[in-house]
Image 1: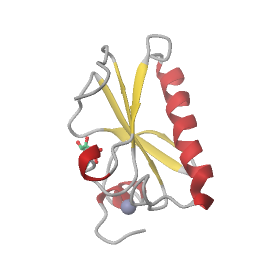
Image 2: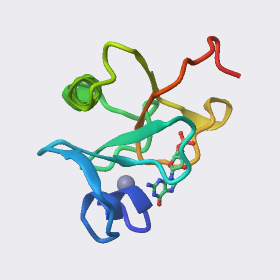
Image 3: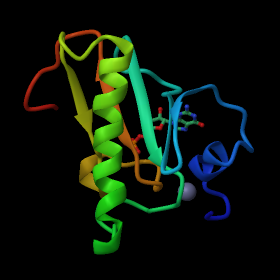
Image 4: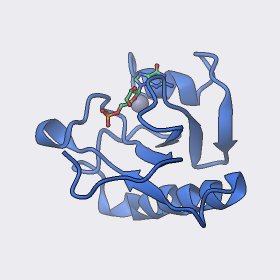
Length: 115
Ligand code: 5GP
Ligand code: ZN
């Protein structure tokens, strides 16, 4: 756990947040500021700053986050309609919280490329 990291505190249950999914490796919860009718964040329980700093021995965690996104999409019933998975990375990528997270967005069509 990284001190002062808000997502570490959410993962550890120190900040009360309703989880939409959790297992040994990741935790998922609704974004505070949703950009779509469904906007879920999926984070590793163990702190990783960003996709940029993920180590080669953390590949299993990276894969797990994507598998969890697909599982949640199927479980919540929006997989067939479609969804968008986003990992903002560093400044130009728009990353604001430096605990790696996957955005899982659904409930409306999404433009590509994003703005
Ligand atoms: P980023 O911009 O780093 O890709 O995404 C960070 C996301 O975390 C934003 O969409 C923001 O709304 C969300 N967020 C920031 N702080 C909190 C929080 O305390 N709780 C929740 N549920 N979401 C948060
Ligand atoms: Zn953290």
